[in-house]
Length: 410
Image (cartoon, rainbow, N blue to C red; front, side, top):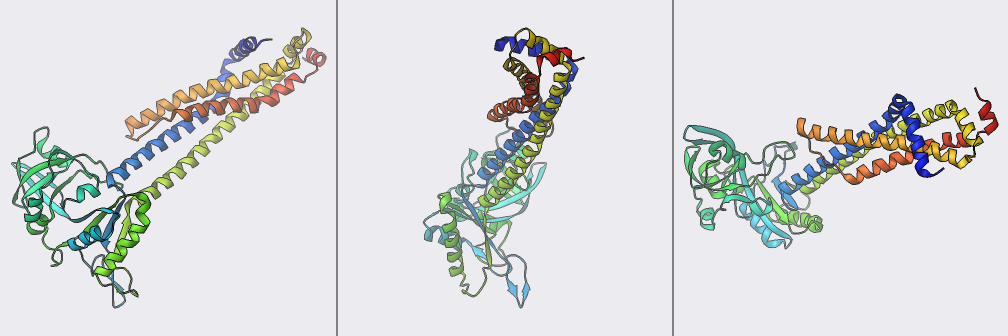
């Protein structure tokens, strides 16, 4: 019997008991669909994490004032030491790996434009901030050096603020008021999206740091040129460990922290934090995929069970085939093909179901998904392997039956 004839016989046998065949495939359908859906959602989540890494900036450190001890009591963050703009300049000058060191002030503000009001975050920045955060200007321009130096009343709008205040209208050159101070819009920032904490990074306005200090936020605890945080961008990722140690040494030296004293500041490696989160998510997705794969094994066991029942039911048919000249290997091939076809048909239905579920989740739950077609191919291949593995024993049992005893079977 040729392979094509064996396939036709297998299809006829499966169609004879159609409902049983569908129920048999159910385990494979669920297993394949679950594996592909979990991997697709995991890949989508990984892409979102990659986007968040890119939105944070390139190889970014955040240097923030830390906690100190006062007579044995631990005081609030930043209660002792103040970072300054001079610290940022020193980091850039003394550490070759640093490509940008951006001193930053941050606070809340209230914007008034005609009869529109909007509360948002204001950030005082210098020219290095856009480099450190890898932030682009969508419209308009960056602050000019003279504006940064003099503390000019100019402002960059985040994408959300620009949309809420101006809609589709051109914001460049328009006047608005922040804390009763008039500002001119010189640029609109490109969209960044949500941060790791879920907050809107585009709900922000930026002004020169001198302007923020003089007009909006005031001096920080009376310290001249004090800043809330210094964002430090490193040239290459493999330089991060060495650069972190150098940053620590420069800050300790500038603030005269003795060797026997703890750091009164913190250095946060943002890329490392996000990568840790990404690794956790990858492990979690692998566990989900492993659990989903159990359904494939369970489906394979179901197929073996049904094939054993089929062998018993078709004992006389096996005897007749052997009597008219069919060899043992022909019987083995036929039953193996039936098992493999059950798994492949189930796998195809499972792939279709996975695609529908994945994109439905993307639309309804706003969950990022990414179908990885190599995983789809592997799932189909794995389902075929399961058909061979779990179908071999029933097929071998059918092939080894004695023709005479099979013909006598009632």
